[in-house]
Image (spheres, helix red, strand yellow):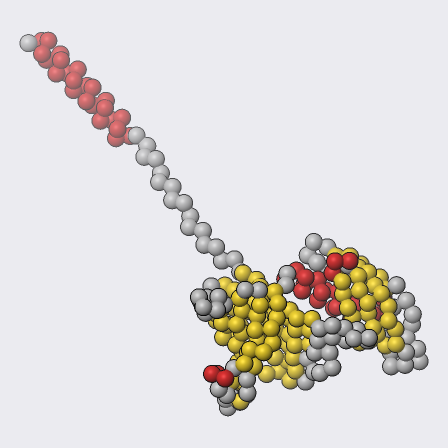
Length: 242
């Protein structure tokens, strides 16, 4: 009888200890991995450069597209050699890839600056397979100063731009801006009769970090070669006109 009672007591003690240990055992926390959303922009760049004439003048057209899902922003610049320029930012939406054309259409608004005026215009661009085609058509004022295509079904895609490295466009712009802003101090010769140097045109060889600049002061004209260096962001660190 005592043995049975002792066995019962021992079993009870064991069960009590087991219950106490399990009751106080720490529960491992559940770690939930964060969901990382990739919001990286896809940047595409296109351009068309004409052949420079004897004065270094040539037509230039550049396009930047920053794609974020269906949204698109960027800029489009028309810089013809002997006509008024037309430049400005763009924004809008872009459709899915057309399986037949293997291209996408962007329906945009172009905030242009031309002939001293700011205007908002409707713009369509088709891009893909290394090219971008700018849509032209008759434009009309819709009544609030914003210009739209008179007949969207008759848009003609006449201007073809080829894809280029976006960093190349950045470097070109850096060189152009630097020269225009500093030509008065960069020129190895001084302007005459109280004149001021201003840039007429320039050509740039990105591969050789060099180029040729044409500038005048209203009395004399200079044509000189230049060389430059850039930093890792393709910004000018030094430029010398020879």
